Length: 345
Ligand SMILES: [Zn+2]
Image 1 (tube, protein in one colour):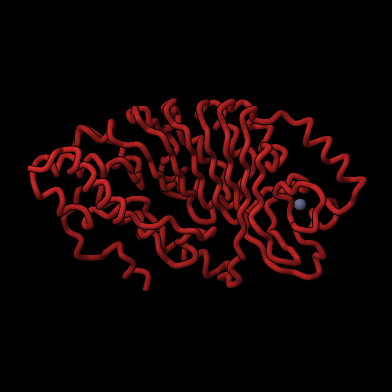
Image 2 (cartoon, rainbow, N blue to C red; image 1 turned 180 degrees about the vertical axis):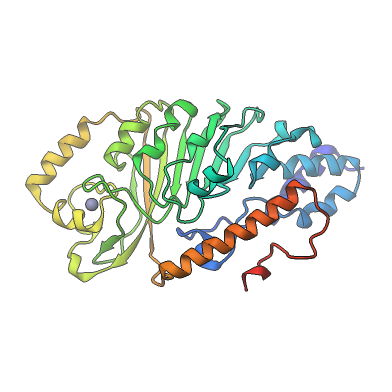
C-alpha cells in the first residue's frame, strides 16, 4: 500500500492533467463555437473516475480533489442538497457559476426570486461567474445574498456590458478580495460612458501598470472600499481602423479603457489630458492596488445577423430548459434528445 501522501500527489497530478485549459477567447465560447457544455473549469468525471475504483482511500482522495472546483449550472439542482456527498462543502475551493439564463428569462422563471448563498463553502477562495451570452443586464453579483469571507479572487467572464455598477456589490460581498479578473470583449470608456468596440490604427500590446493606475475612473471609485485588492486584470477586443488615427502606443498619457473615438479625440489633446488626469487622481482608489494589466485580442469579424442570433438564443433556451427539467425530475429517459449538441442541427 502506498503512503497516503503519495496517493494524494498522484491524484492531484492526474486531475490537474485532465483539467481543460481555460479558453483565452474574449467572446463566449457559446457564440464563437456553438459550444455550451465544453467550457468547464474542471476535469470531466469520465477522465478521473477510474482512480476512484482502485481502493477506498483512492476513492476518498479522488472525490476530494475533483470537488475542489464545483461547477454550478443550475443553482436549484447543484446547491439544493450538498449532503449527498458530505465532504463537498469542505472540499470546494472554487465555485464556477454559469449564469443560468438572461435576466429577462430568469425573471420569468423565478431564478431571481430568491438570492443565493454560498456560505456552506467554508473554504471557498475563488468565485468565477460566466455571464449568459450577450446578456446586457447588470445582475451578476446581485444574485448572491452573501458570500464566504474566505473568497479572495473573483473572475467575471463574458460580460456584455462591464459597467462600473456591476462592481458595486463587490465592496460589501467580498471585503477580502485580492484579485479581480474581468475577461470580456468590451472595455468601459469613462469618457463617453459606453462599451464601444475599441477601434485602433495598430495592434496594441499588453499594458501592465505596477503603480495601481490603469482602472477606468468609476471602477476606482466603486472598488475603493476593497482594502486588500492588489491585482486587477482586464481585457478588450479591438478592430483595426486607420481612420481612427491613433494607437495606444502613441499616447503620452495612461490609457484606462477609453474607446477608440475618445482615445483619438481626447487623449491626444494635451489640455484635455491634464484636466482628465487631475480628475482621475481625485477619485478614491483601492489602497493596496498595485498591478493592473490590460490584455487585448483582435475582435472576431463575422457576426451573425440579429435574426440568426435571436433564433440561436431561442434554441439554446429550449435545449437548456429541457435538460434541466429532466435533471429536476431525475428522469432516466434521455432517449429523446441529448445535450451534446445534436439538437442544434
Ligand atoms: Zn468613449
